[in-house]
Image 1 (cartoon, rainbow, N blue to C red):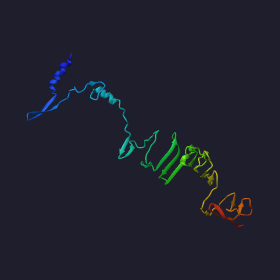
Image 2 (image 1 turned 120 degrees about the vertical axis):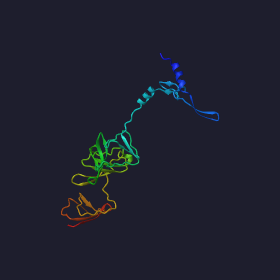
Image 3 (image 1 turned 45 degrees about the horizontal axis):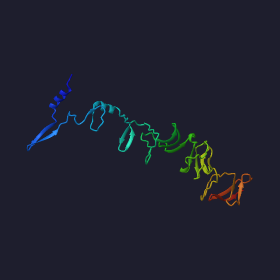
Image 4 (image 1 turned 90 degrees about the vertical axis):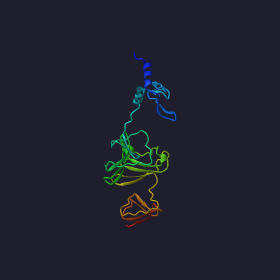
Length: 255
């Protein structure tokens, strides 16, 4: 059995604690040599104090316990991009920044910004560079509609049923839980371009209306009510009307 004390003494004979480098003016320049000298600390399986010297097993175990983070990203300047082009980025948290760019970096000639649930899009904004068109698209998951409303009312139901055709609704500042009739809408039903409203009239304000087409209505009446015609009035097939400030200001029967 090896005598550990004798072995240690023998090793100290060959490893001086000080090495004489030079002599000047009768004084020696010496630098301590602590290689192999563990007197400044204790070799422990698990170090306790700052100066404790860990053994190899402890170091190996500590390194093995550090989780390895996969390197999925390339960095160029301040830009991060997936190492594999086309990889998706998913998060259950927020993405915060000053600007959001959706760039056709892969040359597909179209880019999408989709708001979806369970992988199914409800609203999509597309830049279609191939066909020279920008698209705002909806589907039945969001009622086939866009509601333009106050930010203070975004958590309220605006009470519009699922639309047969894509429709845009414009609401007043009023909370729809207080009054849900203050809206106007535009859509195309496949035959006609339609304006509609929950309450009030279609008011053109201070605009004049000029058309070479046909204006159709159940009845026509001047702003002051002094002249008018209804569809039940027979024999009148030709007439002129002038609309000003949102009202019919002139009505002339030609036959």
